[in-house]
Length: 319
Image (cartoon, rainbow, N blue to C red; front, side, top):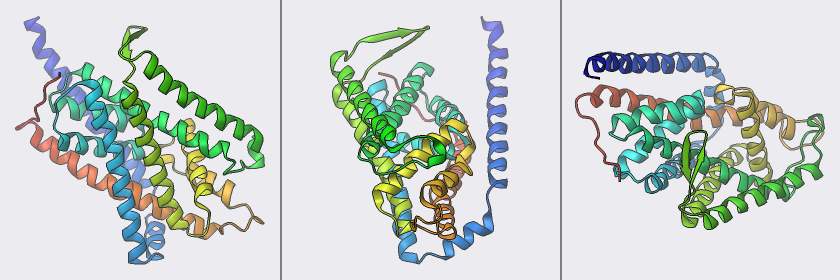
């Protein structure tokens, strides 16, 4: 076993460099797809007060998302400090939004938490809990919004309003079933294809729903403020639809997908909801504030972490 350790260390080091190269390539690819002049023009169309409020909402949304990992800390049973957990979660969120969940949500979390001293099994529990939090909250909130008939899907989608309402009811029932399962089988360990997992306590399950629903609502409010002329429930429902579309097509940052969904729902001629130039300007401003600015800060944090991590790794203990 000792003879293999140098090879193992080299393999881990090589894997780390390959991961860094992948991140750099994805960042360059993402940056090339951004219309930077249009972003600047869109931002110049808003006054300082509007932008300050939008930036504040973005910061609050990132803080809310980072709390997913704080709740996951209790679920996974580790002792990493609150400050470190919040920093890692917010950084991974910025990368996940722009580069995809596999890189930001899983890969980067694995690297940052591992360099902070957490074992792989514990990191797996954190990732699973955070991903579940995001989507169970989405299911609950989207279910309520769709069941209430807040949005009518475009005719080209072949999905009638009645069917979308029925889907919303089913989503609400699914979220309630999850909470019921947390209460019924709390602490029970399940086994599936060599993987082991357990449901959180009912209190943690309810916290998952509340945190994620709050985060998605903040995102919808941010877009609503940038649009300014469309009802909040309709903007939120459209954003929720675009999130599913982006997840299905696997396009980094949902480039083009979010815009297509908003144009299909809010921009068809004759509806009188919002004109196309203003809609595109609002979405460009949304990307600048919610994607690009946090990504630049996350990149700076990540580079600083890589430079300092080798000399002074963060320490943690698993409970």
